[in-house]
Image (cartoon, rainbow over all chains, first blue to last red; front, side, top):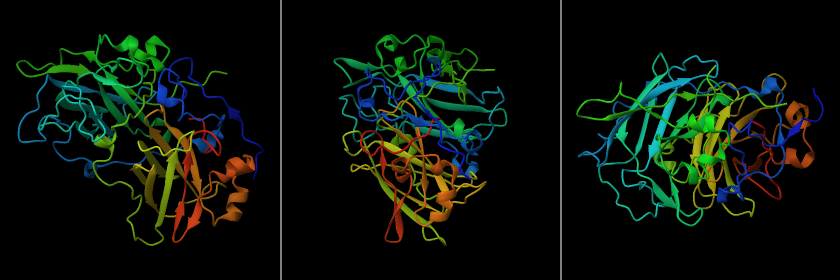
Length: 234
Length: 161
């Protein structure tokens, strides 16, 4: 059954449309990025069906990060919505979308977050939902704050919301970060800049959206997530 | 065709969003044939990676589980014996996300007691012996141990995604 030695490939950023494992400006990649070539799986063996999710995986209220406690969290209330699409442009229905984020002051509710900014007793910062038949999702939250980290002197992360999306197949699995338009920290953030192609970077930036901006209540941001991979260069 | 959204690191605080409930059981613990799989994720210096999340999927996509690592880099999953298919030996697909990884790493966990099937597996057969060894779990009591070394000496074999 052996088809011979499998092909080895160097890590590829696919023309700058995705990060490399090793990105020296992002210091912690230096000890965690693999240093051997990657093995190319025969195509027929590479595709795995993704797990099926159902209503049992989410509870009512999971998509509203502002109503998980007795009171309302502080911060700028936002509605983040969009669609999950396959690289063929088709919507991905009923797939699990999970988000997590810092509070409005830039602090995560996590024991290892040492940023001396206040925790908000009314904010956990986690949500999830299933996309609907048209691949749409919607979260209500507060805008996360920027925060410092120790990557380099005076390092700050631009405000972002972490997204985890499953999709139809194993190769669709995506964990990314959604940024906010016009953030002055973009140029200085090695994680954002790990994607070399400016057009590809822009695909991680939400757009301000009047349609979902709700009068007297919340600002709307739109963020479509496209799963799959840019074809490898030859 | 829309272009794909790039990957970014899961960061150090993913437990807020991804570990809000136990999901380490691909099948219920104690169910017939259930295998306990434990392991440690270590970095290029051999140090534990305490902020990784390890996801396991079976070939049919029927079972999915994940577990964040603890301070020792340790994780634990419970799986049914995975099926083999199309000439492949039984295995689980394993994805690793971590702070410091800007995109996930893909590997496979094969079973130590499937020597014949492993010898005929087209992926294992296409690897050098040292690479192959990193993909086969080792027995430990009633369970299995599958360690994941991200970099350096004894690095786990990872597949291009």
